[in-house]
Image 1 (cartoon, one colour):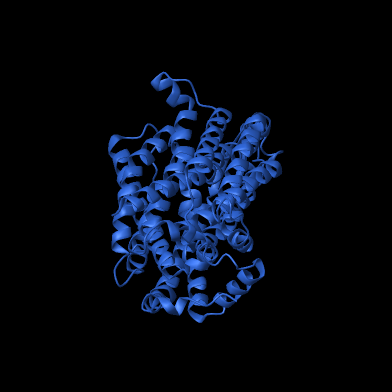
Image 2 (image 1 turned 90 degrees about the horizontal axis):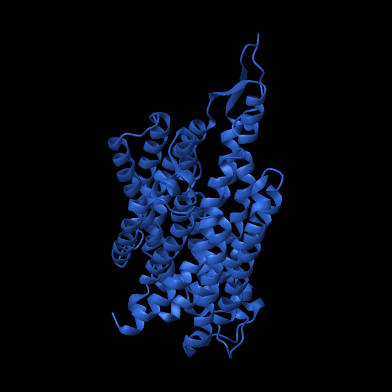
Length: 477
């Protein structure tokens, strides 16, 4: 690999890391913190803040075709977006105590500010995806997805796992360190964002090759998207992406929350993911090499089976979760389970990203990549709201009042939230869950996942990967 490509990969990893920091907050640590005070239905409302990342196709043509030539096609968007992200994190840091003091009453404002944070991160992602197609040489394009995996995972890992551990009172007390507050972490991340942006502005030049096709207008790019969407094989790929992640959606959205409910400490979860992290980085490199052959979708298809199997195992782990304290044997099993589950997820992510990179047209790279990634991301975003709502819908719980002739019944959604439990405790009662909707939703998701994989994904993916690259290209109007 040339020194030019190594430098380009370093730049891409840093830019994707900046993007991963706010995503780790919105998709990871903040929902965990809110879970102590909100029901699953209320968490479903907050999950709507993830949608901009999945709907960025709607404004990607503007990003792809509108820029200042003196700054650069991609830097014209990356620089201002990162500045806005930095200032928005400072705003959240200044107001986070007020918002988190009573999150049930502030759920709409919380959802709005994190939706804005994800929106600007998604816009930065459009520009970075497009830049990756010209930064790397043709023979090393498959490593663009590896850079994305390393950068996003590192940023996400810092905002989710590392922050949750350092934010835990038990972890801080155990290791004799001060507890890291969310406001402090947000201020640190904003300074990091400003620093990278200044470096990008003054020390990183954008190549002239990124200006190719700069005569395209916003209208022409939207027309190009429409023409791409009319291709039969693109439509088949979109359908596949839209439903592909339903099978393990309950596992990804709810399982970790359920484990914490059962007694897994946040610091224990952080240690598990800390051990898992380097394996995901290695898995990214492995998957990039695996995806560079004649059948680029092969690793993506193969990894479906272990992901579905781990979704089933995760459900069983929650069902038979031991009482605290956890034994070393169970903890080691949990680590191995998490590592193998994460590897299968990473293989899928890198595999499909490498396939997208291969078939995307560099002239409209940001938009073409975003079109394909939109349906990949949307496939993991749109079911989450319904999964979280479904857990409460299928649950049955009541408040058992002690020393009373009959039980006082309350809604499950109220009895699984911290506020509902406190209300029950105030009348000398205890929340009892008769039926946990998590198991019902998990079973429905896995059943659909297996059927859709066998009946649609496998035969369709094999046909799509056999198509020559030119079949995916059209001339911009």
